Length: 395
Ligand code: FES
Ligand code: FE
Image (cartoon, rainbow, N blue to C red; front, top):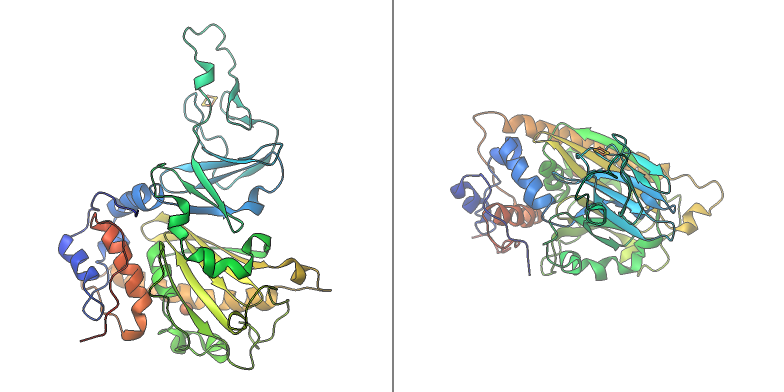
């Protein structure tokens, strides 16, 4: 079972070129990065029609906590009841459609109350109170509860599927369940969160993440602790994700300016996992970078075709938090520097896309994960069952 959507408003020949075999393919056409119509389509299908990461369970950890999050066209209200059960609702009042919480806002209270005319809902979503509706004929209170949205809790994240018809969640992540297992991500907690707004389309940040061809020129600090051509990409694993590994240099315990770690190695890791970093892009909006001693995530939300909100978090095991004087900045400072280098690059690419002289480019042999990602996206745009393209040896 896989995602399949109606065709996107993009030139079919350009999509065919993006899906051509590796070594012959082209990148996506500029309209995929510039057009409001394409972003509308993506919000409806790639975001509302798929499983989208809506954040960490820590965001709504307390009983009675609520948080509103924009997903695609739809804002979602996450609500934890007094007994600890998490639910997801459309963030829309059943009276006249006011948002229950502003997007991004949180609350802790025993009811969900609309700030417009005070319709009040139980944390289960049932409508408890609608002032001045006692004398309204045919007022069907039992059927005016909040609209439920499918959600899945996985490795400490919450994912939502607004349309309700995406394939089962576990088929979305599939092999990642096994690849992530030793990291016990559910017990990791964020120590640092950074927010960025990029002047670039959301897909450019992911394409950039899928290759280290650019590393020697723009990431001198990264290249000191991890050789840019080391490691392998995952090619035969199933699921809606693309990724690969890179090795740490022999002197480096982790990715930091001097290669030293200020935390503890995540306990369950095997020898190989202690010497590498996994870089995984989960369709459509979550990047997960697994290090021996911490996990960095980027959660993307498109704001416009040319701007993207990024929430970047650094997660650590309880053993690191228990360390006397634990300071996570060895990880977050290193990647904040590296993020800035990447954002400058993707913002430059975005400016290039705007030129009428832009022509979709070619991919080098070490950009095979970019190809996997782009061909996955292109097959979705083309109205086909979404699948990564074939990685074949160049002719
Ligand atoms: Fe919510 Fe009126 S729109 S109470
Ligand atoms: Fe980079």
